[in-house]
Amino acid sequence: MRSNSPRSHETSHDADATKTSPYVRGTGMDATLDFAFQAAAQGFARGRPTTNLSTFFATDDYYTTTHSSIYAEPTFLGNHDMGRIGYLLGGGSGSEELLIRSELAHSLMLLTRGQPVIYYGDEQGFAGSGGDKDARQDMFATQVDQYATEQLIDGTVAGSTDRYDTDSALYQHIATVSQLRATYPALSTGSQIELYSQDSAGVYAFARVDRDEKIEHLVALNNAGEDQVVTFNTLTPGAAYTPLYGTEQAVTADADGTVTLTVPALSAVVLRADATVAATENPAVEFATAYGTNLSGATAEIAAATAAGRWAETTFSYRPLGTEEWTVVGTAEDDTPRVYADLSAVPTGTVLEVRAVTTDAAGNRAATSTLAVVGADLTGAEPEAKPDAPIDGLEVTIPGDHNTEMGCISDWQPDCEQALLTQDPVSGLYTGTFDIPAGTWQYKVAIGGTWDENYGADGVPGGDNIYYTTDGLKPVAFYYDARTHLVWHEVTEPPAADPTAEPTAVPSATSTSVPGADPSAEATASAQPGASAQGTAPAAVGESTAPAATAAATAPGGTATVPAGGGAAPSATATVPAEGASSSSSATPAGAAGALARTGAIGVMPLTVAALALIMAGALLHRRRRA
Picture 1 (cartoon, rainbow, N blue to C red):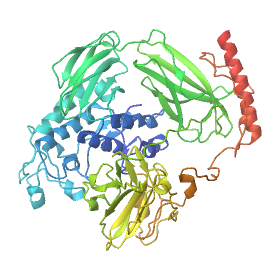
Picture 2 (picture 1 turned 90 degrees about the horizontal axis):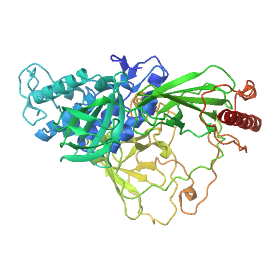
Picture 3 (picture 1 turned 45 degrees about the vertical axis):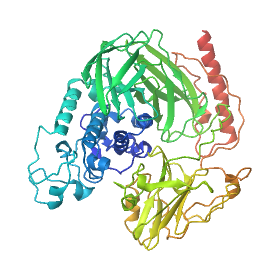
Picture 4 (picture 1 turned 135 degrees about the vertical axis):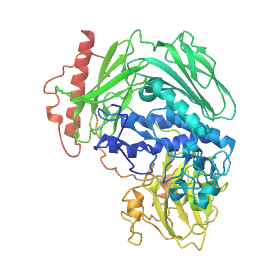
């Protein structure tokens, strides 16, 4: 479902799809403002690795339901609250390079999925000097001295003059790419399929394909300061690609679909294939979601794979085993389709038949089914041990509403150099000391200059914001332990620790409410990244905020007793049959699921019945395949 005029709502300044998508998944909202795109586009225009865009766009799947889609999300680069993109990139000092990087950011917004929103005056080169009133320049000849003396994005002084110039550089750039988007529907509402990214500044490439036309529009953007030559596979083997924008060089894909493309520095190119995207000789779809896996909650991940490098639409649905009616989850449009099902109302212990049906460009279809259990994992697979994450040489920052006090361009800025922590060679901790004015503040820790990896209270990934209060008389020191992901603050720097010693647990300062001394803190928390109305309460400076922990559990050779988490199932043993093969039949034993619709905690009996149902269903699928 793709709307060109969504009713959007500014729910928060949150760059996390898991926190913003529920507003469109489970409410009457058509869309929310895509703050996650703003953060990703700003980082891209600054020259961050293009794999950051790959990670960001992968979260689009959270918006896919029968009634919502990422394609309805309003995308933007700046606004009246956070400031203009010119300021966010340049901090108020303009230059020719800043103008070019702003053009690159606008190209990204206009050529990718979503509904682009241009903040008034950006097309005139306004940069501003901050957010709110510092980003509300007059289009007419201003009488505000501040606005008149500010630099425009190209470095010239704004002055007091009317600003309705249709010949300005940014106006012309935005108009040209907007016209391209309007001329070719694939660039507006077509599916977006990633083709190339790299772990450095450079090229990000993708295809846009309209589901009716089925013509590949090849888009590549380069955020590096020099031309890039890249080779990658497209969706249309043997096609000749005609330049539409940014280049005059046509390219031709070989029999495997491979092209070699030159993308100019800080620019974008768009080309159009001369044939429809390739179909699949023998279409097939396979589940990446394991047979017998646990699917539960409001965002239960269901994933599959279709023919690599081919455009296809894959629709997912499920039903309780032995019933007739299917519940459709949503339709994905790439070769690694994925959706997130809301199973929060399905009783624990229910065995589900999950279905994937894929359709390629020629209309060929393939289908497969698998089984899953709500609230229990009966795959029989041993959990994979996660490799040890690196703890040295990380880019660690403390984004929060204190960032502008540190000298950052904006608050909640994960890539701000002024908020960077430095690793202590002795203790291994990342530390930094800052002069913060009196007040109550909140923050988290971010890794790698983006929100992709961040930790909040108690070291929880994407967890609650951490609060602190300072009188402004002494510096505030912050600490991050990459081994435990705990982050805390205090007045004075602790003595250097022996790296071989066990870490010392620090008293917890968590709470379920914000003190009455700051009546606005609770509301503010819900409008910031990862914030919660039940966050970590402000702590006075000098009081540690690292969560309580068993020190031995984080030290080499240490042990700890870990209590069962919420919703953890009791231990159970079951034998699960081999995964069933693809089948077009949907018949299942009529009574197989009757005893499984349990409520409350999982017990041994429901799990045993679930295992038996899986065995019966596996045998049935096996008989179908042999027949």
